[in-house]
Each structure stands twice: as structure tokens, then as C-alpha cells.
Amino acid sequence: MTKDLDTESRILEAAKRVFIRKGYAGARMQEIADEAGINKGLLHYYFRNKDNLFGAIFEEAFRELAPRTVEIFESDEPLFTKLEQFIDRYLDFLAERPYLPAFVIQEINNNPEGLLKKLAESGFQPNPMKLFIQIQMEIQKGNIRPVNPIHLVVNLISMCVFPFVGRPMLQQILQVGDAEYLEFMKMRKEVILDFVKNAILEEGGGSRE
Image (cartoon, rainbow, N blue to C red; front, side, top):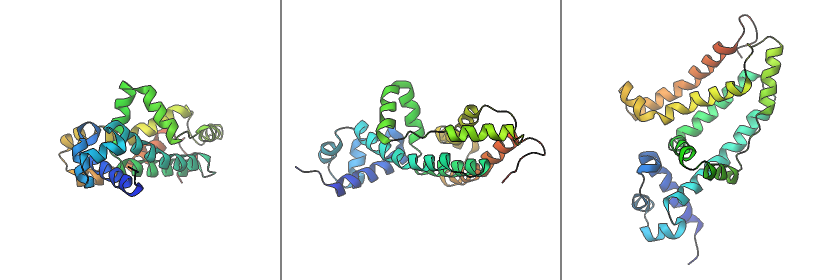
């Protein structure tokens, strides 16, 4: 039996929809097969198990994210324009794949070697060195406060990722449904950028553009 690319693509798209609804842990192969309109045996023929299926989705997602991230890190845009682009694209990426952050944390705890292997296979190896140097130059010019570039980028990523990891808890605390939470996430883009600017800009120095 020869694998058909159209069937494989249909399975992957169906799996994404199920993972969005149920998360990685809650998704079941039978539900994915039903979503794709195929029998479970055919699903196992293509991907064998849920881990292989999710691995294919994971690699596809990060193959898409890698060039976006590299483009931002390597660009000659002003620092805050670059940070704004990163926040905008990263939040959009996660909004389309809300199941990824929880899976990554689960893999960090249970299978860090496997996670690193998946990242390597996806080609996700952006080099933030140019961004780090740019931050150091802005510090030397007196435009921003002295900050550790690594901590700044880690803080930025953390502020983007946590609302997706903690979504069930936050929705319960805020008493909002899915549609309202998505609007909340759209607002996060401006909130995060303003927070970073207020945290690192020297008073009277630099530009907020």
C-alpha cells in the first residue's frame, strides 16, 4: 500500500483541529480518524501512534516559525520595531497552535532529549546574537537601561507563552469564554510591547518607535 500525500495532509489538518480542541493529552487517535473521515487502521498505517503524528505537526510548525524568527533577528530594523515584529508573529503563531506550549513543557519535563531532536529536525535554530549585539549598542548609546540581553529575550518569550500554557486557569479566573479570551490575547501584543518599553527605556532617551 502506497501512502497518499492528500490523505496524509488531511490527517494532519484533522489532528491539528483535535489538538486545538482537546490538547495533546486529551486527543485520541479514534477522534482524529473520525475528524479526517478515515478508519483508525488507516490512521495507524500513516503515523503508527499519536506521538509520531504530533511529531510531524511539531516539525511542520517549527519549520514555519524558524524563517520568521531568523528574518526578525537578522534584520536591520530599529530595536523596538524588531521586538514588536517578534511579539506580533510569535503570538499569531501560538494562537494558531495553542496546543504547542503545553506539549513543549511536558516534553521538557519528560523527554528533553526528544524535544531537542524534534527541534533539530524542524530546522529551528535561529541565532539571536545580532539582536543581543543590537541591545548592547542601544545600552551604550544611552537609549535603554543596562539589561542582560538574554534575560530580556527570555522575559519577552515568557510573556508571550504563559497565557497559552495557563489558558484554562486564566479563563476560569477571568470568567471568559474562548472568543473573549482570543480578544484578550490580541490585546496582549500592545500590552507586552508597552511593558518592555517602560521597563528598559531610559527616561528622556531613545525612541518609542
